[in-house]
Image (cartoon, rainbow, N blue to C red; front, side, top):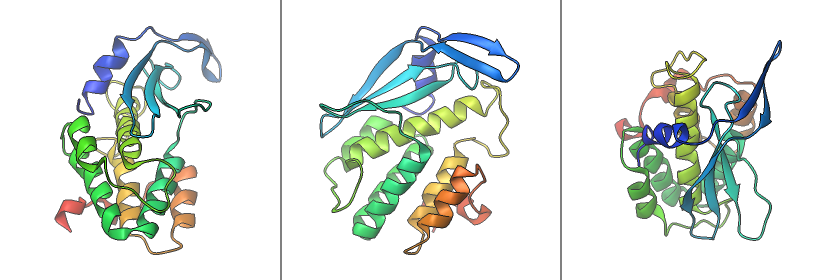
Length: 201
């Protein structure tokens, strides 16, 4: 499965129940869901059709074994990557390059299999979960901010917005996480210099 394949899966799911209001779209009931991955620690990764931002929109849901499910955000992804980086920089490079591989069109499942055994002293999620749900967040950006969605992006492909933050974390200094997270939650782009693929550095 590649990033673009996610769209076909989502389109086959039952649409969400939506009410159009003056303020935008209001989700009255979520649409269908699909289990896409079962992780090394038993966490299940789902996509759930929400149609919230644009028609066909979806969210990523993690269901840790024996715990309540939740929808991970970009901030969780960034913080997890930062923890991985400061706890083992050499191993973390493999994780950052895995995102580049997916960004360049490699099969997500193959990339996940390649990094599955990498562990870190500090992390929120195992590497395979991080890579898998992170790639789905990339797909979500591509859906909502492209011709398929209803928003516009200045970046091509739109997932480049997310990739620039991932590259920023890969090249960050200890303590940079505050600036990175603040920039992300204010929905501002990462500095333009992080538009260069890690393969080119």
